[in-house]
Length: 172
Ligand SMILES: [Fe+2]
Ligand SMILES: [Fe+2]
Image (tube, rainbow, N blue to C red; front, side, top):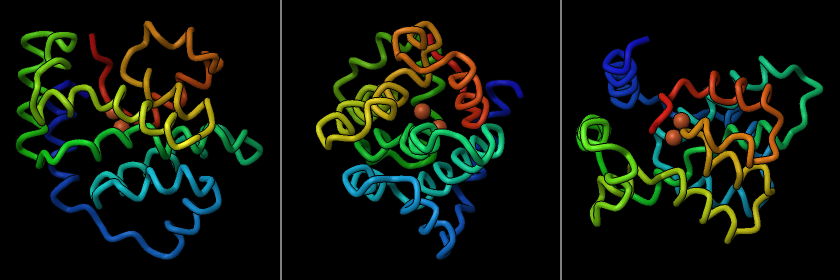
């Protein structure tokens, strides 16, 4: 999918984010520790739905004997999005403008768009402070930056599976 197509799909998805049902919440309880769940619960409805879709896709690719830490990493990868009160339009705008000026610069913007672009680092920091598993901290911080994957300690094939399950674009 093109970047524009990805954005359009994500925007449409955020508008029709479904309510989570009992099975969804049971899935979250099964794979997250209480301190991790507290981070996850800060997400808004659309982000929770995206988290579950990502984790289920990852579990399917990993197989049922997968290390639960990888499923937890998939569930928690975007918890940093809770740090910004940006709606769907603002998020799409932040992504487009960050693509134009470069993500490194956009991360430093002292506003909601900057926090959105920087959601990977903000999420990793929150998870670290909460005492989450180190795999979840590492993946939250690196999930958009392929160059950082080797430093995470997560096997490369797992990084590929987690990134494919997410479907978010790589950033510079
Ligand atoms: Fe992300
Ligand atoms: Fe994501």
